[in-house]
Image 1 (tube, rainbow, N blue to C red):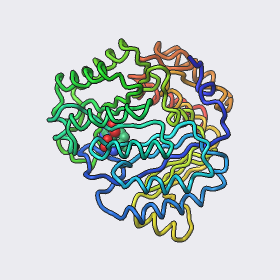
Image 2 (cartoon, rainbow, N blue to C red):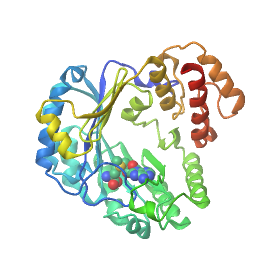
Image 3 (spheres, rainbow, N blue to C red):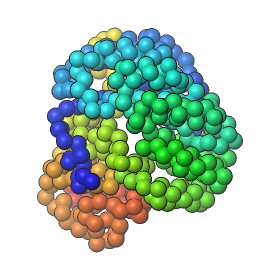
Length: 375
Ligand SMILES: C[S@@+](CC[C@H](N)C(=O)[O-])C[C@H]1O[C@@H](n2cnc3c(N)ncnc32)[C@H](O)[C@@H]1O
């Protein structure tokens, strides 16, 4: 087992790339990601290709991980994904290439197509195996579709992730049993297990304001199950067998460099953090003028950059990696204060209990940080 994030990551010179495909068949009732059920895919992909040109100097570093997410990348015609790959080809030096798929827009043909493009990791949004929950969440597939998609995925790919959300409307202990049964039988190498986030403006936020206590109990029960079945909780919401970590996400959590392309995508290059615009109109206008389609950017001072790194690293089981941050004066004092107050923090990382209380812990860390470095 690696002892640190930097050991796992190896060469820091290469860059990672996230590409956002903002199209879905239907919007899920809980979803707050930027995605649309209408709009020209052709225009969007052409704009995306011109955005790639703007980043050629960074891309020349070599792309180590590529993640195509959404929205629903599998919803658009696979030839568009091929077009993107052809454009990127000369920059790719890939260790991992993930694409997100939904059960109702994924079949054997797409699996083979993606494999030929070099995809070596699939992420399937299953969310739940309970038909009532799926319906109440606005999902457009049923449990059978999800199983079929998983079976196809695992026939063609060794590295498959499955996303689940705990706390969706209509969930009962029975719903949890079906998730656990699936994991027991199929043993996916990687699982992302999220607690439902209730975002303002989503349909479910009109009916749910906060998660009930039994949702937390159900989440805990799945955590216990995963642990007892050999899954390593290597990040707050991510679990792996046999060290099959998401290499792309490790780059986020180590706060290393990645480019985000497409509507609403975010990037981090050295001390620059940015987020792209979130409408087609703004995206197309900026790119027509050969401008970066950025809505928000911040050039971080070293203290801010270090704080962001620490926040990300503390999400993982390896915690703070001193090789990846600048040694600030008085930083050790902050760590000492926190480790003497919280038994779940050893001065470097949070244990499993700490991961469950990470919001409280990070809130306190932020306060100390402001006192030490911003006054
Ligand atoms: C970008 S979304 C991918 C969506 C994918 N097209 C789908 O519908 O399955 C990535 C994952 O974030 C999780 N997610 C989305 N909205 C969430 C929410 N409100 N609370 C918790 N997890 C959420 C889901 O598990 C989802 O699969």
